[in-house]
Amino acid sequence: MSEYHNPVLLDESISALISSPSGIYADATFGGGGHTSEILRRISPEGRVISFDRDSDAIANKPDDDRLTLIRSDFRWIQNHIIHQGYKDGIDGILADLGVSSHQFDTAERGFSFRYEAPLDMRMNQEAQTTAADIVNSYSLEDLEKILRLYGEVDNSRKIAQLICKARELSPINTTGELGKAIESVLPKFAEHKFLAKVYQALRIEVNQEMKSLEKFLIGAAKSLKPGGKLVIITYHSLEDRMVKNFIKAGNIDGKVEKDFYGNATAPLKAVNRKPILPQEEEIASNTRARSAKLRIAEKTE
Image (cartoon, rainbow, N blue to C red):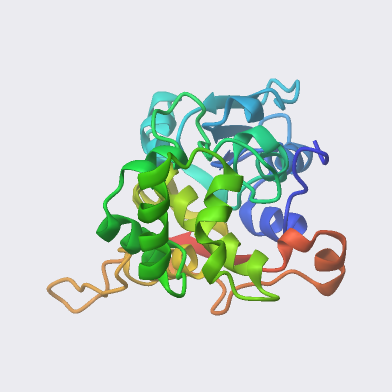
């Protein structure tokens, strides 16, 4: 499993998640199974774990343990599945690691990384229809500029969109190399990789509708917890971290606190840690992909 993906903030996240060894827990982002395996290690024979992943490659990592139910699904449907599994009164904790797995980045043909010459794919669910190539070849200039600006926080997003539109007039942009060539004239010297990472992040988020999935997941997760249950989320970029922080604070992704007739906040969660927990230097040294991780913990209110 470690070769597939090295779990980030493992001890910190699982320690925050588990309140009772006999509890019912969900790992909403199974991936390589690292977090799920640690939950299984810490719970009792009476405990149960329900894990989710939409990537068929991840499902192959399922450990042989009768306490685990592994479901191939987008985590946006978590509430439906929790109810279907018979836990209509809620479960004790839900964990989500929002990072792309190392396996996805390192499998060239998946098209998640500009490090490899590969088809522009980026689908987490390989049965989904829309690929990154579809987006760069069919989206309007305005829509390309919007996703680059909003999802990648890309400098010169308008110029990048213009270059993509100009290049595709000559021939379709179907590979990572063709995309790199289309925009190479504006790549900043000595910071090409950081810039390209933002472009790829924007395309990946759009391909997989990650922000819409995250919003629906947060709403469903809050409804799926028992009072006192924990929501434990690891984020990796400012956009998703802002959404998680706002939802914990206000019960919506805009962060606008709503109050009832008596002036009490109606948010379903309360923050356990005021500031996010960050990886230790030792973890970052052994796993550089942990460097941008932030761990937020919330508790379901009564």
